Length: 290
Ligand SMILES: [Fe+2]
Ligand SMILES: [Fe+2]
Image (cartoon, rainbow, N blue to C red; front, side):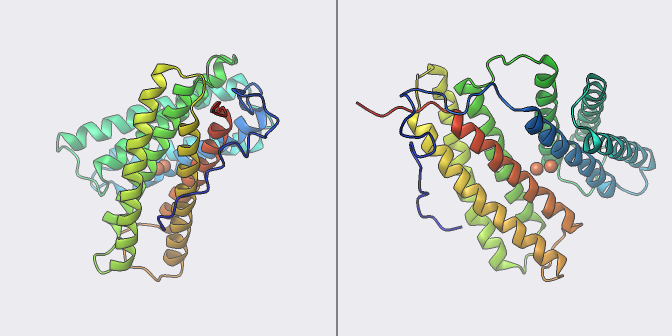
């Protein structure tokens, strides 16, 4: 991760002809195609979470292993449906919402047992908390889709809260990677520590800007510049994860990472973060100073 400043395209993407204070790209929110792509992405992620949980559970807890397996199968069936679907029907939406709600409950129950030392799986408690937050994020997307009304989804504060969500997720991915690499992998661990420092700062700044958005400014050029930086850094992190996945597939790295799929999973989440932050960046109101 190099530390040079990103090329912040202040007004570049907005277009010089845009009126000051415009909300570029605010054409009524996600199109159906975007929504479908997002739902497909998260449904697969939920299936993989269920699988990671199943693989990390102690073998003498066959009851919980079976529960995880049931979630895996439930999301596999839903994944097949959303991949075939050309539109999200109310029935499919309801099935997804129920499944994600149940999975959130299951993850909470696991974490509760771990905190109370009633379960000692090969999974970090923070990882369970992390994947619970991802499920909550997906559920809020499904709830929004169920409302079928635009609402205030493009409010500046809402936009920056999503940036905070992604910066926290990216920071934690790095922390998991650091803890799963073999101690002998010093060069990779050093690179991961550098990335961690970067994302700790990005998360801090994102939280501060989100808080400042409560003042409801008409435009927020600094937030737009910040999101450009966040996109640039997340792109670097995505490449790091892709490289880690390659190393795992080629059997060229020592780690406790249970499967290359985990590296691929976090790489796909970085891709999703970049897509969302580009959309967010387009919706942050910017204005030329006078
Ligand atoms: Fe995930
Ligand atoms: Fe994640």
